[in-house]
Amino acid sequence: MLWLGGFPALDVTTSTPDALCPPIEEARAAIQARVGEVRGNYHVEFALVRAIDGRPVLELKVREAQQQVLARELPIDGAGCQDAAQAIALVLERYFDAVEKPAVAPTPEPIPATTDEQPSRNSPPTIVHEAAVVPSVPSRWRAWRARAGFVYDLELGIAPRLGVALFPDALRFTPRLELGVALDVAPFLSQAKETAREQEIRAFSVQASLSLPLVWHFEPWSVSLGPWAQLRFQHAEAASLTHSQRASRVVPGAGGTMQLAWSPAPRWTLGVGVAGGAQSPTATSRFVLRTADTEPKPVLVPDTWFGQGQLTLGLEL
Image (cartoon, rainbow, N blue to C red; front, top):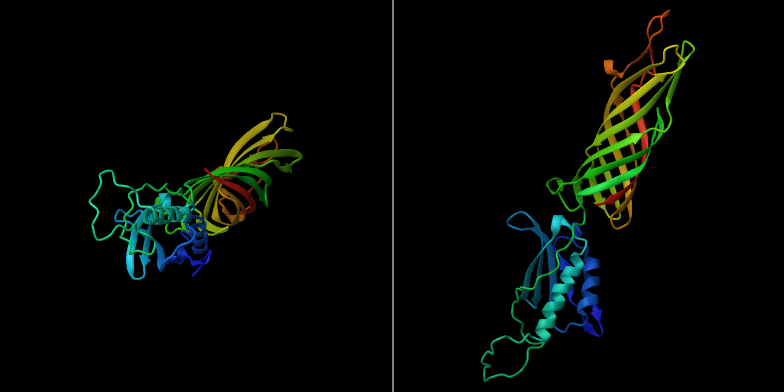
């Protein structure tokens, strides 16, 4: 039981503490700031539940002693809980203000002769189902997220990285666990080089990757892991030949990725991760040096395995 100004504050509990929707301490602080002193044996309980249509809602109940005096369901958009504590506090503030200062009805009602007292916080209240509109709570985890950062590949070196990730509501299993789809592009700054038969061959590389990150949130941190597929587009030149040669190829690869991220501010995340797997040496993944007096020679043969480190700054759109 909290104490405010010499009077006992509302006893606040939740039957779904692991959902963190909202965290119990955050809810208590918001209620304390808005409601203030309360006289009477009131108990507030909230829970994250699903409505009949499957949407997540915040169920709010208030009891005085053993009598329920308020029942309310607060919709939350996209399972978001960012402003849920303020929404609860706003409903309670309106309720206790109505108990203390009841609104005057448009049409006067006959007043019973047996009483002329105004309701107070010590009088037995009536169950209230508020019709007032409470501001909708914005989504805690937004569907679209932009990503930017750097990649360091063991074979190709460093590259800037740009991408986008989608986390649809249908793939959000709990307020803490969600599955997404991410697409990233990284042009490598340095060229791959090889000298064969006194000829220098250079190749410029761009990597496109697709991943399915499964993200677990435990604020302000999150951990993600999932499968990873990539295509490396390379364009090679052998300018030192008598007749300059050019060629292009695609090197596919598949594996997995893992990332640890931290949220320094709302909507922003800073992540450090790794990706690795195998590359397939198919016919389209070969560069062959051809000269008039020698046999064709494969050059810039890609590694069988790939591995890279990632530094990513994310923004929820």
